[in-house]
Image (cartoon, rainbow, N blue to C red; front, top):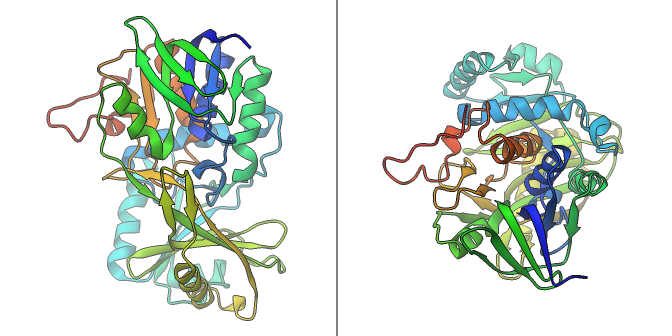
Length: 381
């Protein structure tokens, strides 16, 4: 293996944001290398809930989310690999009048972005979702939403990108990143030095650390969403459900094999070890809430729990856009626990920013410098 290689684009981070970026860049003829410290999809992209929702998203994310949804519709045909994509809908339940009012406001806004929300009364919600046992005042249902298997998606995007000529370097931590005035210089542990005309920072929870090596500072916290899965049982939960409990959402979906996947409450994340640990008490609390919201779960076994490492921004919107200090650098990290569905949209946008110099997708609200006064983005066409 050569000690140095030259690329049009070096992508740091083998999660869904980085691999979708690599795929769409390779599709447009760019020579791309992806550097991943561990296995592709082993961090947040591979251990998340797998939800593909537009429902309930912040308005700032909807242009990106709607664009990603169009790609998810054809993703298996596009990359030629199974991703267990299904569109069974997503419902957000309201248990208070003020929450129901917020759902009504959101639905009216979302229609302007091409989302088709269906507002449901309490009676209509119970008829459509009779398996919900807790108090219900109404809900908002989006039939076009769904889910995919996060354990398959990122690795299969890696396969598809490799088929197009991308180089995927796993188990290959980055030592240093710098810029020599012409190229980005990425020194790795196992693949020597990679030089790139462009660099994509898709490093997830480690994105802030990578940016700091290039002289940029972004406020980023770490989070560890925690999941629990039940034993399999006959299919009952027909759509993904979000239910508010004491100001935080309990969310659940049932997969084809019959297992119920649900989450609420954090685990513990450690950036240095690149590992997350589940918190037993939070898993017990999530199971108790699951049995309150979905009473048919009583008597069932909960067989596994896990967590993953994710980066969180102060406003829960990602850092997505061009660097102001290095024109060839694109940041795409900080997805705050809800970036899985956005992945293909992020990949398209990153490819457009690099190849075309702009994107038609509105991403100004994700400007990486938005927490600095007077900063504006000009990435949208």
